[in-house]
Image (tube, rainbow, N blue to C red; front, side, top):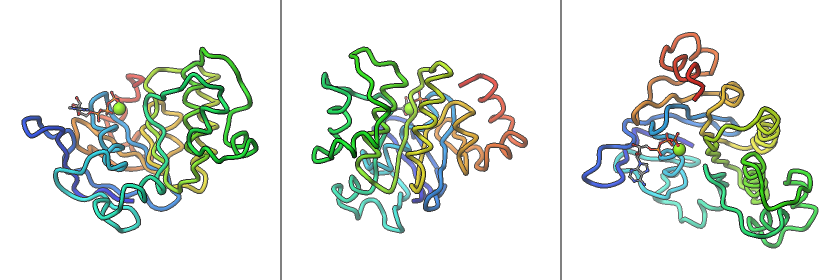
Length: 220
Ligand SMILES: Nc1ncnc2c1ncn2[C@@H]1O[C@H](COP(=O)(O)OP(=O)(O)OP(=O)(O)O)[C@@H](O)[C@H]1O
Ligand SMILES: [Mg+2]
């Protein structure tokens, strides 16, 4: 999957939300998008899902420009875990099964965090349900937009475990906030005001990129 000099603005009278964005995600690897609020992370994830077409440049999957792929095909190829997860007033089992109504109970349980109940789910539990939904679709590409809300250490560890399982054998674009997630990505793309500041493994960026160090120090 690749972004090639991608530009996007939400309306003709608005400035570019992202510009000159170029990076690639090799098959089965994980690229994390990092940056402050408003940097353009969710915009990139949305362009990959073809919620919009770029104003300029090209997004490709398997070499094909996204514009040439039917939306139904894109939905088969990509499973998305959105920044905010919408849950219906159903059991956890049925909430997960929404991703694939014909899934068996075993398939749902394989994808799910162990059978919890209750209507007041924590942020971490909601994210794990979203991840389970994505797993159940079996799509080879995963787009994860991590929620910004901070989780307690235990939930963060559980979400982290669920994400690692989900990422195994998939090509993953992840909008990541905590260093724990950024460290596990093969490559981090650092965005500032819609532009790429630097691209590289977490350790390398930490060593050479002051903007990356600042971002992590602020605990974003
Ligand atoms: N639907 C929209 N209409 C107009 N402008 C938007 C829209 N969504 C985002 N923007 C603008 O585009 C820019 C990038 O926003 P984006 O949501 O991609 O940031 P982000 O990096 O995901 O931030 P966060 O960490 O807060 O989720 C911001 O200037 C934002 O105000
Ligand atoms: Mg966002």
